[in-house]
Length: 264
Ligand SMILES: NC(=O)c1ccc[n+]([C@@H]2O[C@H](COP(=O)([O-])OP(=O)(O)OC[C@H]3O[C@@H](n4cnc5c(N)ncnc54)[C@H](OP(=O)(O)O)[C@@H]3O)[C@@H](O)[C@H]2O)c1
Image (tube, rainbow, N blue to C red; front, side, top):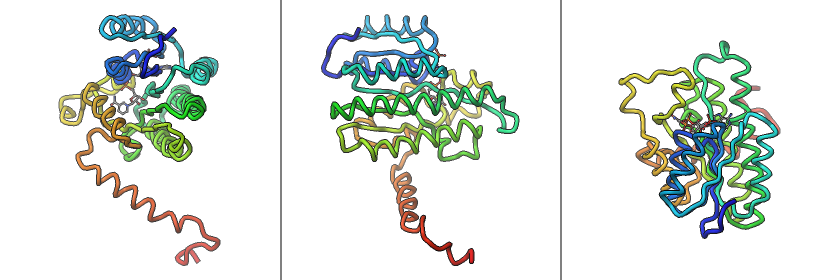
């Protein structure tokens, strides 16, 4: 079990590799105890030992396959009941390559279970616990493909658009109850996700690929600054705010009793 500390405990899903492992390291550096979730128990144990020897924190391992409803519920229950948990990093995710028409239905279902359903149920469990406590943070890993669905696998891009939308709604629900919410939208990041989804990245992509260290450091800086949406590679945040403003300009006209004149 975690020992009590000032920061509390961060539950990081997908902590066994890539971005999740970097979050675990950076959060340990900041003094969070850790609850590390993924399927590969050995990798989680190795990470836990490393982090506990380097930092004055505890790092508990919680192996779970988050495509399995019972495993999701086990983690959600921990999030509802453990008052030490103060941060949820919903990072576990898989990608697919190829067209929607050719996608294998089992892979599509597994992606939706993990990227959408698990993330939703864990966010919901954390939101309950954190709202009651009046503190806490929820970081959801989306992707820039949420903004460029034409450029990537349809199911993956749609799952990440869902993450962005859910996070924006969650902020509206719990933002004024002391709960901090953030959607992180990384561009291409050098992790195992590419190999796992059957994509080979040749040298022509080098200028577009960020290291997971840089990605997580930028994302945590955005979190510290209270950003709802962090896009680590975007040079000018005004570009994102212009998009939001354009969206809000539509708002007064999105629901009327009569169709627009051009359809009559
Ligand atoms: N890398 C990129 O270019 C990029 C860009 C944008 C967004 N992202 C997002 O960043 C997040 C992290 O991905 P990554 O790039 O770090 O990839 P990664 O290195 O492949 O890490 C994925 C993590 O998710 C875990 N995971 C996979 N299936 C799982 C399951 N069924 N149950 C529980 N855990 C599972 C994996 O651990 P186990 O195999 O041990 O379960 C691993 O720890 C994902 O949400 C991804 O969509 C990545």
